[in-house]
Image 1 (tube, rainbow, N blue to C red):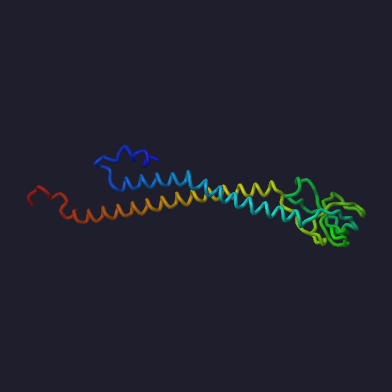
Image 2 (cartoon, rainbow, N blue to C red; image 1 turned 30 degrees about the horizontal axis):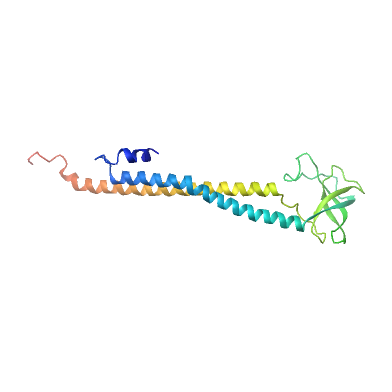
Length: 201
């Protein structure tokens, strides 16, 4: 920012070097890219992610069904940890042998994890299946998809800003290295005669 503010004030100063102006212009361009390009890229990425995730939500809700299963018997007495994405953290889950009817009318029997504190024969609970009765994960909900899309957009905007700033710093570093190299060359030429001017030697 100091380089940008000094761009106009020092543009005609005889002490202002060409590299100083170049560095100031570079800072100005980088700032404009961060303020303009990064939000645009973030918005485009977020919109694309939102469209893709919402299509996935629609497809999952079409192909996954919530059915009622009935406990045949509990398989063990040790409760499993709750699913952090679908529970409050205080719910317990137990492995049971259960039966259920698929959306296509076929009967199924198998080992499932029931969201029950204690599982007894005849207890009912809900599970997600495909239309043929195969067990599937809970479908993604629209709010979660939107959250993921927003995070993707923010990540893209921050990544763009980081790339712009990283590029600016790299260019400035190369300019400084080149400036130091020119100083070294000038010193090598003037060094042997340093202090001899006007001495008559």
